Amino acid sequence: MSNYTPVIIIGAGRSGTNMLRDILTSLPEFDTWDCDEINPIWRYGNKNYPTDELPEHLASKRIKKYINKRFLRRYKKSHAPFIVEKTCANSLRLNFVHQVIPDAKFIIINRDGRDVVPSAMKRWNSSFDLKYTLKKLRYVPLQDLFYYVWKFGYNRLKKMVTKEESLSFWGPIYKGIDKDVVNLPLLDLCAHQWMHCAENTIIHRQQIETSKILDIRYEDFVMNPQKNLEEILKFLKVESKGDLQKAVSKVSIKSVGNYKKEFSQEEQVHLNKILKPTLEKLNYNID
Image 1 (cartoon, one colour):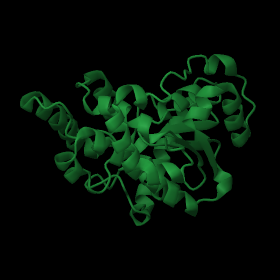
Image 2: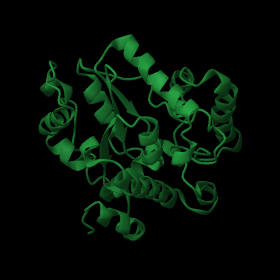
Image 3: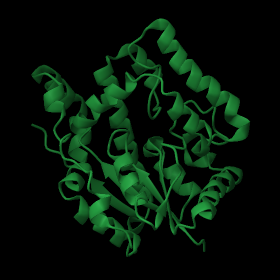
Image 4: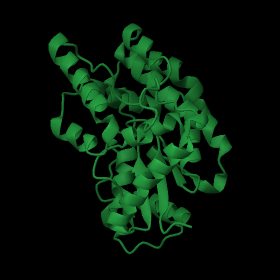
């Protein structure tokens, strides 16, 4: 029995995963890495696998040992009873993550995919951020460092040289994304990316005990953040000594329904058509 509990936040990119992680780790019982995501750690031993959809059988003993060791190292630095981790690509491989850390608690955060799309489009169009990239490289396994330096550098350099509006890739790499990048407009690409993340999570969660999972809806959380934070703490069986009101003080509802401001009526109809089956599975109403 370890002295800490891994808390894995699962959600597609731009679904509120950063918000949730930052709120939790503002409380004294929680700690995390000082960078946005640790996908290279999760992909240790599998860096050449073509997508982020790592199947369970790739979770070898060596890989499990390495990833758990990195969590333990984080715990030894802070001695926080809960180590929080958020890597959006994990929404594509929840079964793999569960294989690696079976004792983890999972918080699944869902957000209306129609609001995710305009936010994701901005990230695909984002400029190169050296400080952000260097922070991520600090947690790359040493033997994989050259691979990721080349990968990050090529992606940004290609955008600078070709003057393309979008990055070569951003966010979780799902099966077929390489073809979608070439063939689909950015709106459709982002819709497909969210859809794959949400659908994979829906399928994989069925293999995990319900007692290990708490579902959060982004829209509900931002409407009543303190109540929902209390629910999370209850799920984790912790009475925090932190100021819960202060922890959620920056939460805003302003981005709920944002797709209606960002997209034309025609684009909204098109987006609804793409995302309707997945949205209905997550109990979102289609206008």
